[in-house]
Image (cartoon, rainbow, N blue to C red; front, side, top):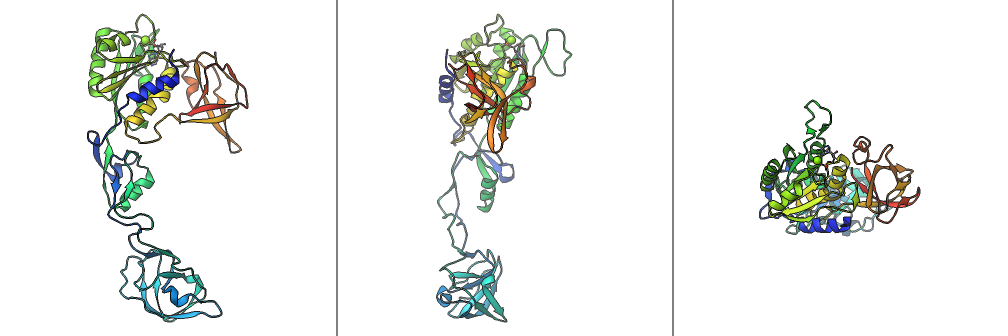
Length: 408
Ligand code: AMP
Ligand code: MG
């Protein structure tokens, strides 16, 4: 059976990330949060824009004050006061200084700022009581960023720091990648919506809601296609619609080997390239991955935990990669000690849900309480991590390290 690693390689190789030519959208800075930058940003401004003072104090010529001390202060004449936002008018000449405030433009002639705590003010004279470093407390034009260079690269998410930079660079309209469109439907004759009365044997379609929530968390646009009966005609119609309207299609159910599991056959009839139908993992073995010319198809297992685990393991990084993120789209694992005993049959890569907890500054994984069953959605609530037991291993003992996939 196909290993998780190989399945991942096949999927990620099939993803064509969004590109600047076809997938670009312009948004206002105020709505750009969490979007992904589509083109590199270059600014015509320098940061700082001009030489300015990093302190409240006095702008001086280093040459004048280089021998100052409290016993032997240098006395300078104050020729101008420069608050922030004011353009200095006077060039500082030998023996002169300007009163200056944090962020204000350095006057011509001055090259150094003396913080006011190292001075004594007497009418229009300032006594410099200590010797500064040359150019001390001056932030020079372009120290942080030189106009014309790349300010932000394409493919990064716009978080608060990047938003602030774009605002400071006076760029209120931002080119971002469009949101990935993800169609979701559930298949099964037994399924009802949360609003319908439950008859014996029926099951509420929770997967569609879970998957929609996950896609939205990742910045995707959701196309909810509802519940589709285990009926080849209805399924063909839905899948055909989905592949023509979405970048990614997620179905759940109908991909195991039961008599009513038609999806794989329908994919074949619609000329999908079916890459695999099962993966060596638990939960999540009956996973189908297929590609159409313009969309990727994931036939997720019907069991609610399996649908979520396969989403976190494979679909989440796929959506991130498709979205145009240049790095960091892969599933992220960290190695931590397990607090619980973790068991597997040794034949499947096993994902165990539970919590990553901080104990005295060290992360530990604790398995959820209750039955670990792919149909038991209840104890998945309030978990934040999946511990991985690799193929070939049947037991991870408390205190032993294991890989953890963070899901929140
Ligand atoms: P299947 O893969 O269709 O054989 O479904 C496996 C199990 O998952 C069955 O017990 C289904 O009733 C259940 N199931 C299938 N689809 C969903 C769904 N959308 N929401 C919740 N449970 C489901
Ligand atoms: Mg079914």
